[in-house]
Image (tube, rainbow, N blue to C red; front, side, top):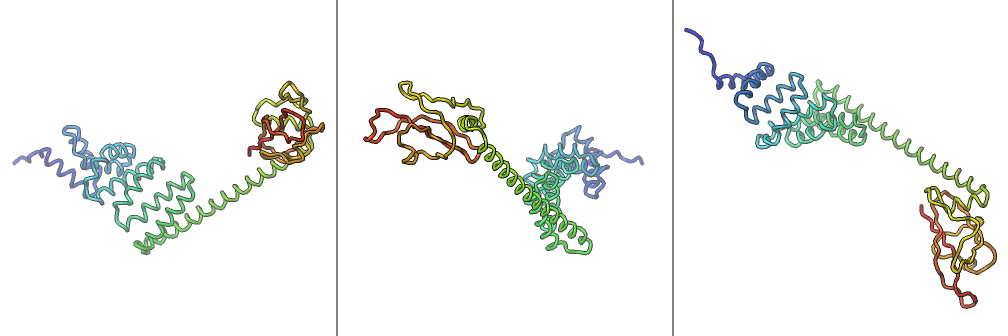
Length: 297
């Protein structure tokens, strides 16, 4: 008797049997042929994605799994964890660590507790390669807790020690970043003090121009005279004393022939604003404009 050729239903059953026994290459050949003829349902599409992963075809695995992932939400939690984890692993193998993280995080929500150690370890590696040292440390710490709690076997001792070493490495990176930050702040303070000292030693006319214009590229006001109402001339500014705030000291409010003097102790942005103020009744002057220095850090 001649052997009867299997029909498409038989081929599908054979593909599923190959898949469940870990013969992904044989299963993929049958799935691809059937998919071209009939377009397989989302579950079998997910099987194909897993087969692509085991065949080292990571790009095809990502495309296949991510295309059908929304339709896979109706299946059992642990089955979905396989698809999520496989998608994360495919992106990881492609060094697409940022893309792998969401898939690993979804797998954590539906996988078994004894699988969370490995998934957290993978998440720690992703954050480490992205130089997110605090997130990497936190993930390695969770991985260590799950590995010790659920997989503390002689076979897993190497992974447990390695996870502890990764935590130590991330902690050293965090300390190094903290030292660099402190060093940067210290350099900034030192540069500020040097600039302040240089301003204090500058020529009065040059220093007044710095005080008027600042470092913002704004046009400096003339340092020789400032014009008030009725084209009255105000004496030039010679920096020697600090005036800060909205109200000048009483001594500075008195009208005098002496010029108003201003100095700066640090490089801050200043601009001169003319505001009309009330003059004490003892002064026989109708209008007088005083200079107010507005300090912006």
